[in-house]
Amino acid sequence: MTLERTIETKACRLLLKEGCEAIKFGQGGWPDRLVVLGKAYPNAVLWIEFKADDGKLRPAQIIRHKQLAALGQSVVVCRSALEALGEVAKARRLIDRTKQRG
Image (cartoon, rainbow, N blue to C red; front, side, top):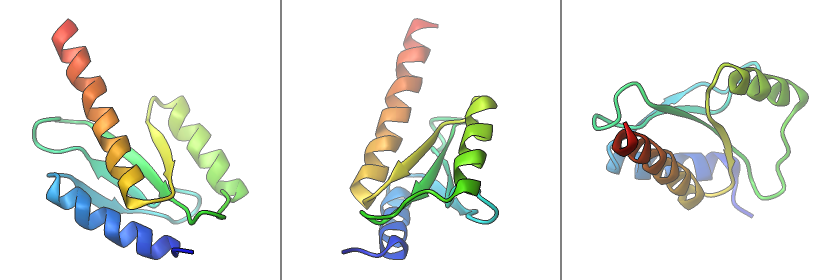
């Protein structure tokens, strides 16, 4: 089983290569990272909570994730570095589609 810390470290390295910045949070129920999606996506962020395969959200995390979602923020739980990359790609595609319509 891969440790949460290992998943987070690998994901941050990969996200940096993709032009993202992953700012550490993870206290008081806050998700582990606030990911700035890059220069081509101004003002766009994604909150990521990293968990090992058997990891579960703590009650404070569930509350905080709901609060962030109510504020229009995107919060995802990722169990691998590749899943984190996939979530960033998905968020970027959504922004791209919105730009095309606008």
